[in-house]
Length: 344
Image (tube, rainbow, N blue to C red; front, side):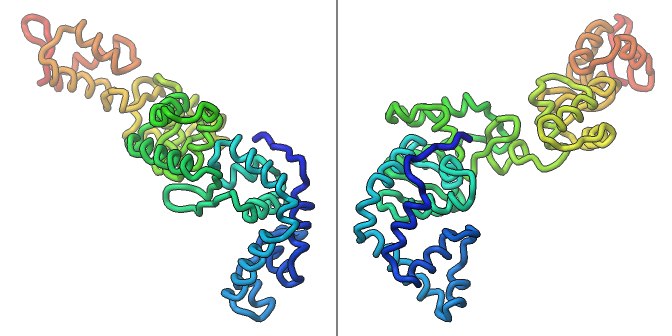
């Protein structure tokens, strides 16, 4: 993530603002927002125990201190600092997740804490707390924030449980919902940041988007990784290649034998040749060659040898002779006087 350089030094800016407070007021704010050397943020309870006061009293001191800073001469003198931060929030999309915003401003948690405090103090910045739908986020335009959040809700509602959408298509869908959006915001990077605000929409390591609750997005085990790998490949693939791809894409050590065993156990996968697996959702029939022939004949009725071979080869990567050998099994198949085969 590219860092945005500011013309001011955040630690110097917060130091000037804190200078208007009493010693205890400074200590409470520094402890509460992690502005000290250790960058550790203390709870209201922890600060209260230090001073022998209630957590509610600590909250009162915190609120009083923030109000005092906003009324001070130092606050007015920091006008350019807040204006620059507002320009950054706007450039990032007008509404941006807190984590994303702070990562753009600084790498170190200590410096991030100082930027965070400046956002808290600046009256133009509004912070919405994390909830079931969205992450902690900051915005400078309530109307825009409402529009983006409503659009994210609509996109989520349109996704089916295990559906995966390529990034470009999801961005296009987003733009379809906000046609009257200011042109300066019609940027792929900004829209991806907006998508990142949502708790309910997520992206898997292969760059595909879907419902965050889906195993296709929040992959947790070897079978989920294998599903995504085979889906990305787009055609039957050998289990050895699946194992190799899992290691490559997910940085997870996948043993060949383990991968093969997991593929065998899961109904999402169909063995279509020697070591070759496809996805059941692609329409491949399950079972060995004999079972495939039986399913075809049950559906189509009597067929010639050539017709059977042609249809089976669409389901299985096997030699023609393997199909013919199975057809000779009189326990399962019979041939009529016209040379057509049917199930026994």
